[in-house]
Length: 101
Image 1 (cartoon, one colour):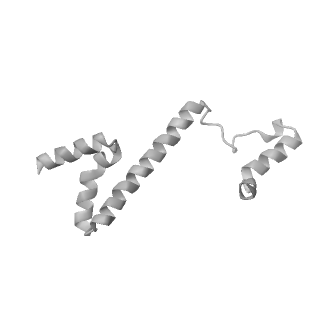
Image 2 (cartoon, one colour; image 1 turned 90 degrees about the vertical axis):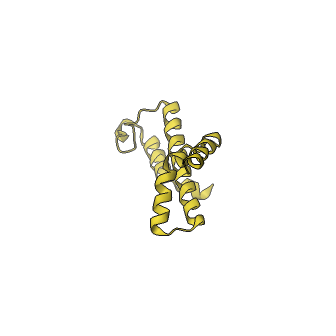
Image 3 (cartoon, helix red, strand yellow; image 1 turned 180 degrees about the vertical axis):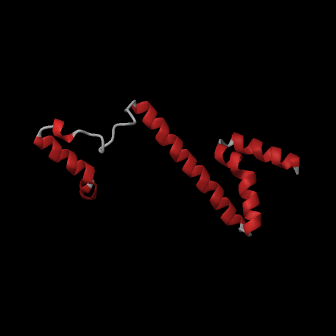
């Protein structure tokens, strides 16, 4: 059993699936306790990997953007902008333009 576990970890490293490698044992125990099917187990493992990759991507993009993290619409001093810019910012914040695109 230990050899199979070591092999599994090696395969997951080679496939570059770090979250699955980290969570595999824990999720396998959960699947056994809850009587999850193989498909449900696989679904949970892949869901965790996708979420982790998405989070790492967001963090990487935020870091590369060099935007100050404390800057949000809530902290933006709207009165510092001319009226036309404030109106444009409100339209952008609302996101209605996305439906029209």
